[in-house]
Amino acid sequence: MSEYPDAVKIREVGPRDGFQNEPETIATERKVELIDALARTGLRRLEVTSFVRPDVIPQLADAAEVLARIEIPPQVAVSVLIPNERGLDNALALREEAGGPSAGDGRTAFDEINVFLSASETHNRKNVNRSIAESLAGLKVVLARARGAGLRCEGVISTSFGCPYEGHVPVERVLEIAARLRDAGAQEIGFGDTTGMANPRQVREFFTAARQRLDGGASGAVELTAHFHNTRGQGLANVLAALDVGIDSFESSFGELGGCPVPAGATGNIATEDLVSMLHEMRIATGIDLPALLACARRVQEVLGRPLGSHTLVAGPVDWRDAHTQ
Image (cartoon, rainbow, N blue to C red; front, side, top):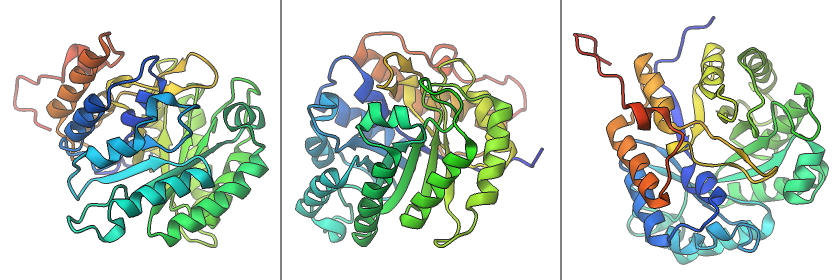
């Protein structure tokens, strides 16, 4: 077992991945309130919306208004999900309207883009109606244009650990897709456990192979990020396995919101507050104020009007009544 890192990076994806999976659309005003609060918890990475067509994801049809109204501290990197070149066109046009990369207040509409595809042909067809090869060809153009516009780029690979339609997904296929994304300009690769099929042994072996395969190449080293779902209660165990082999970048969602719209019912991102609580108990720094983050989770629970799955939201942080400090 490797030594655990002293600190990890966490990208909060709830405002995009979480809100898009709610059966009802959250009011724009409430989204802005929640995003602004999350940006003041110590989080340094925040995915706020998507440029997927409104008829496909109506819950995020207000992307332009959300980006115009949020007030994010300059030290927080704002990212948006980009499905294809048309989505990038819309995003870049909005960014230019907002003042581009040289806005007077020092804050651009967004700093990073995330592109995505699946490692499973069947899932990719059902999700974006393209083959993997077609998706890669399109994303190569998107990544080149985004990098040219000065944006940091992440490529996210869904079903990296298994597919609900095809079952086992070969590791070599996932890593070949990752290498193609890296060489196309992605500076970060996120590996998604889209329907919660991963287990800790698999995760440990996968990221060992990923580090060996992706730590070099035409574009040099790339940041490797783990995106686990808690669909079957193994999310934090998988985080621990990834930490074991040196992964120090994770994505999660406050309140355990979100999941995947394909197939239906595949919910269960790990809760950011559960992740932060565990890491702090392990004395791994996140830079995040856990009570402030829990206040955000409580607020989104009020907005949605239903109980959420986060354990720390229910039980609260560990209260050590002795000299133990974090």
